Length: 107
Image (tube, rainbow, N blue to C red; front, top):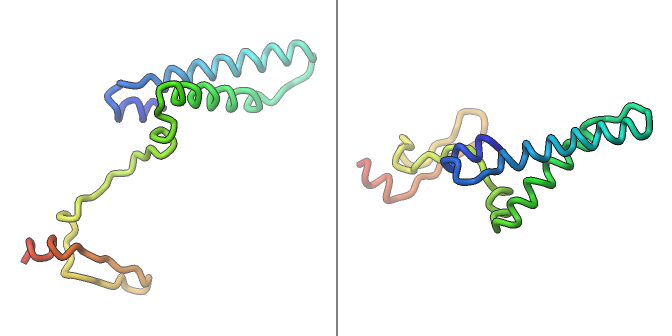
């Protein structure tokens, strides 16, 4: 969540929601462990609490789909691809298709 917040210049506070969920899940684990006097798997309470707090935060802000589809992958612009049309990768069967406008600019 911190990477998401950093990518948005800290305009969102999802890391704080995730941290709050972690504290809530850990407190739940300790309370239930003390109540039943038996060991409890911490992730059984921590993960749902973290995901729940972040999901509620995103739903309230109307950003649930945006958060679900967020990726930190870098997109390469078509002009940066250096090929001469279509090429087959040796042995893999993969192909690269360029936009005709991008090819004409390079020629």
